[in-house]
Amino acid sequence: MVPVKIIGKMTLNKNPENFFAETEQVAFLPGHIIPGIDFTNDPLLQGRLFSYRDTQLSRLGSPNFHQIPINKPVVPTHNNQRDGHMQMDIPKGQTAYFPNSLSGGCPHLAKMSEGAFTHYEERIDARKIRTRSESFSDHFSQPALFYRSLADWEKQHVTDAYIFELGKCMHQYIQERMLYVVAQIDEDLSQKVAKGLGLKVPKSVEEPLNQAIGADAEVAKFQPPKKKVYLEKDPALSQANTKFNSIETRQVAVLIGDGFSMADFNKMKDALEKEGAMIKVVAPHGGTVSSENGQDQKVDAAIATTESVLYDALYVPGGKDSVKALKGEAKFIKFINEALKHCKAIAGDHEGVELLETTYVSEFKDDAAICLNSEPSKFINAMKQHRNWKRMAQAKKIPV
Image (cartoon, rainbow, N blue to C red; front, side):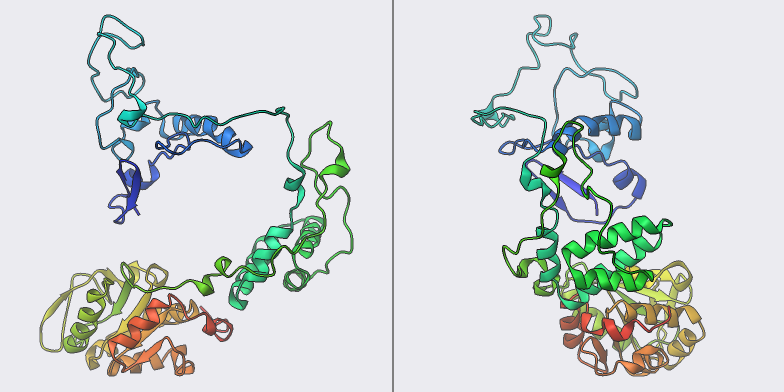
């Protein structure tokens, strides 16, 4: 998405037209904050307040990176920053310092009443020391709560992620140490990960467990305690409890070839676009395809140039010749099977159902998010659920 900058807030309202200009060159700085927000004493944030500007100087190659269009304020700014590498503006006035008399004191400092930034006046009465609170050493209570709160399919995602990442580690002693750490979060999770790695969860590891401590610190004082159960579960931590009431901006791949049914296409297109979804025509070739009545339809992507992971759902309208053309391209079969494996909503009408039944969709006819010769409203409701995660366990066997 492209960030559109507005005073006081940021709105994400469109996809980038040029990835480099509008995404790669974005310079986010945590030091850029709006009135009403101030910096906490968090050590990570404090370090990044300094380091991010150096990062942008290196990454974007100039101290004037704020003049790149995607980073440029939407309202004029006036300060004493002048010249330097890749200066694009021609600053007015003679001075580059404050206070000054040659420029009449301009630019003047803005007041808080004029919208300028001011620090929050926090009362401080303590000793500042270079250490962390003992509560920082509780490494396991929060991740344990998070894992307990997940739905079964989410827990499987976590398990698969651990197996994937630790499986790439070439040092067994590191894998075993991490299995021990995971066991402190959840024993069942560690056993599943260990099975995926072909290892056993160790009963102990080399101490100290936490080695990220100061040179003069008391080692025992900073070791993680056993996890505590402050709360059994928190529904807000699971996506399974998220309510999706809209399909706005969802991208639906419509798979068609020459000879497709324009009646099926328009019925589904009108219903989806009324709900704010975006139709993307995927065909065997670029340019246009013709309906069975000779009407042309613009193609958004040729099958050779796109992948199912770019879309939120897919639909196959009828049309005998269209389906015959799609069956002749193996990547359409892969496209459908991959969307099915990723638990996305899939719909088909008339001859389009025949294409779907040549894929693994034929084994999921009772699936709530498989809509065959159904009204568009059923497909829309399936899309509103985002994914049908109940399908995940069975879909794992789909070879894509």
